[in-house]
Image (cartoon, rainbow, N blue to C red; front, side, top):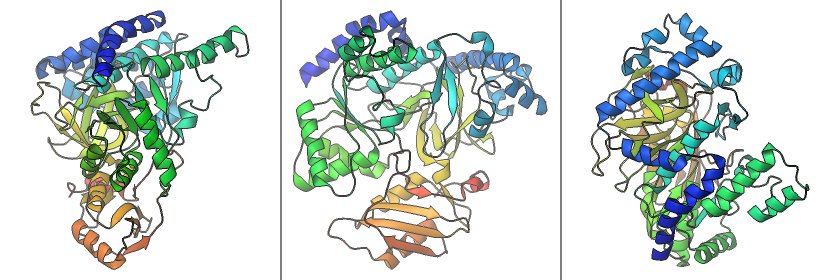
Length: 492
């Protein structure tokens, strides 16, 4: 493991810049700059954000018909932005706005060039498209480098094992027409078996990234139906690969951890365990860390916005990448107090091909501006789950997906659950019991309702398993009352 760490240090410092050079990438020096900015005084950070925001808003007004017309309706313009706080006067951009006005109403035609790429999200509930130019993608590469390697033994070039959801085999290109190796793709292109075009070159870059730079082994999705053979095979692969980092859906990590604790079939220690694609219940952390004998690390991002935050070695919230985005947490469009839960609004400070300003990304979170023991001055964000997964009770309290998941994780007889709210406001709870345990459905319903402070009927049904959504991810909470969040009280 020590040799892998040294190799990773050398690879990232020497080989990575050399591999990226032919693509014109400046990701390595950009990553160094992002790291320095994390320790800037907060006043200096805010000034830089304002300068980036001012440039973005001017560009949007000049070349985006959507923003120009929307802002005119609200009686504001780029001249309304005198301070960073003035952004709160600008209207919120929704996913529906992006869907309706993409691409002509949002893109900046004066910056059009052959490097433009259309980026499709892999959201759990709906899909949107954005445009990134090469410069924006390069900044994103630098940001993800920081998010994955800060205060971490993982380095590019060292071994990683990834277990993505099933839908990623389509969206991420795992089942594309590309070859299985860099040499195979080069031979296919040289022999004209694969046409030499933009898609083939993109596949080649992806193979270089996956096999040389990230050194990633991708495993098939795990069945969560008690298939011991599949879990054993996965652990055996981890034992052979000896990765420095394991990335997987939270549900996959937990299933593997339960298998390891149950059987004692333990792989070599994996220093970094990283959940992907979904909110991670904090009550699962100890079980997973002890199984893999590593540290659970998180970062926050999305396909359309790129990396937005990462945690440090103290794993107390995630540090915002302030040079990349302006993050707000609001209720009714107004900022909440530090520590209060609200909707996350994101302004991409570097996307000049398609400005995205005050975008409601669909997450709930809290912010903390207090200094961190690691020495970074950037604010920290604490995620509370998706907006669409939060319930508003009849008494006006908000039950976030994070809170609900942690409640059921502390119930010893419950292994998995799904809480669904109907249009009429009725709750149905499907619950999977732990092995060799039974569920007292009436008692569980009473305990949950007492915790939630609710006096409504809750139908509890014992289930064999909870199935994933079409996206391949799991939704444990399905709400019909999330539209009431802005007017509700603070979460329980």
